[in-house]
Amino acid sequence: MSLHIAIVGSGQLAQMMAQSGRPMGFTFSFLAEQTDDITCVKGLGDTIIRTDQTPHTLFSQLGEPDVITVEKEHVDIELLTALSKLTNVAPNTRALEAFKNRHSEKAFLQKQQIPIADYAVVTDKASLEHAISTLQKPIFLKTQEEGYDGYNQFKITEDNQHTITQEITFPGAWVAESFVAFDREISFLAARNTKGDITFYPCVENEHHNGTLIKSIAPAPNLPDAINKEGQTYLKRVCETLDYVGLVCMECFLIDDKLIINEIAPRVHNSGHWTSKGVPTSQFENHIRAISGLTLGNTEQTLPCGMLNLLGVTVTARQVEGANNFLTLYGKATKPKRKLGHITVMTHSQAETKTELARLHTIAYSPY
Ligand SMILES: Nc1ncnc2c1ncn2[C@@H]1O[C@H](COP(=O)(O)OP(=O)(O)O)[C@@H](O)[C@H]1O
Ligand SMILES: [Mg+2]
Image (cartoon, rainbow, N blue to C red; front, side, top):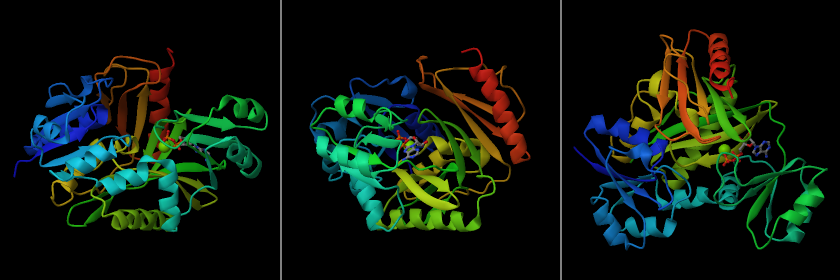
């Protein structure tokens, strides 16, 4: 079986999906917007730049893919719906649509009885003022669409609330969220294939810096079994309700051993990058397996792992060398805050994982 897979997007996630699928005999093409950087996918397949092509033309330019998948949430649902008449789209457009918009995402999760932070929809000055007077500060005001890595978000505090009310212009579509005083952030990653089989990765603990993931530790240290089960139950429910196919990530807050779901990413996820080294089947390979109707691969972890993101900084292999340290650079030009690569570490204890990540953090970030 040799499939041709088209990926919407041309960044490092598309790169790593293609790098996982090519040794399995699959071929790839990529659909990029005119403003997208396409260096990550150079040499991995044809890249088609979106202009005003019809869905039929795009389908043909993409090499008549057997399946179309995505590396991001901000996709053109109308286009993918049209393409789904010509070939398989996985995850399906219903799932992509549910998680593209923070309001529809929250409404969906509530309907599934999955706990989320208190929130309010903000579309004008009156609804913004109402949100400010009812929600827990600092309030996270997020655009309903096109937010990622903490971009397109404002934190509303007692001190800045008046200035922010002046600064936000309407019409606009936002959600305002109560502050969650979390003890830690964790994420659940699962893959579900076309047969409906589902496989989980060990739950991951994540640390963010200014809204962007910087460190992950897997498995999440001292996670109560009940929380693990609860998270898996929610994610399974999400997948089954939407007949989801592919890799999915559920980002959560943990507060006093209470689980609150932050958001769902219908794609491979940065908090799963460690799986490229830490388990037999990476999130990228399992995504490819899932969407191509194959059996899901083994996700059992034998050694504790950690991952450090390289945000706007790079290192040399020599600087971070170690028998169980693995550097992945995406080949992108350096820009402040940009995700340029990551380092995965495998250790013999979680204490060692933390120490090694801290050491690598100093090496990577201290010159800046
Ligand atoms: N309601 C909240 N309470 C506390 N922290 C939050 C809240 N919302 C977001 N954050 C912090 O900001 C990070 C990024 O927010 P998130 O909603 O996940 O946006 P993005 O889509 O940009 O990843 C979160 O991982 C968390 O650290
Ligand atoms: Mg997030």
